[in-house]
Length: 216
Image 1 (tube, rainbow, N blue to C red):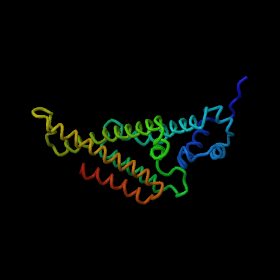
Image 2 (image 1 turned 120 degrees about the horizontal axis):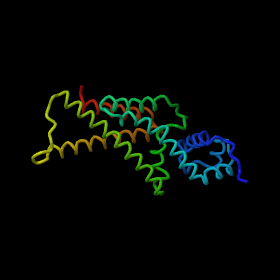
Image 3 (image 1 turned 45 degrees about the vertical axis):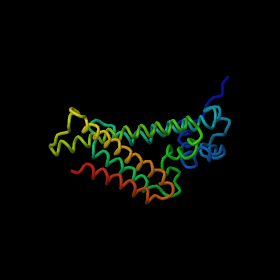
Image 4 (image 1 turned 30 degrees about the vertical axis):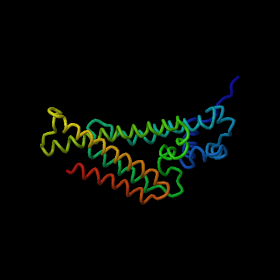
């Protein structure tokens, strides 16, 4: 007869998630995970297969409960300037209210980029998938903001006819803006672990950049 599971998997995964968030994959020992979850290592291995299996479950939970709810506003139909500003303000508030000893400083996936992902291909793929998802959400909202600004100004957006230069210029400008905001966001989340004030300043810079690109 198989061993009966006597604990709530979600609670265990989220407790382990905070350990990985704080210490990184390599820094989190089995003793740390046992202490945080209240589950001994044999039960953890039985439920998740390995420390890596538990980490993968923690990353999946993090994406579903932390990352994707934050991106939802950027991905919504009609998202634009207001949603971009709300995204960076929410991050700034999250950074500012966490105490220095909180395990939830910064971003689990950004932290992973400087640890496990430097020598592990599956982890690199997870980090890249996050960057891609963030960039796509920002692109969607930037396109909405640009459309709203153009409509308000009453100017011609260009149709891509003729030489196509205006369309190419617009695409290049959007790519640049996506990279700028994604870089500021990810850099701020990394810096949040060591300098919350400067992290908040980077996020404010991102919001100021949105206002400069898309004035009311």
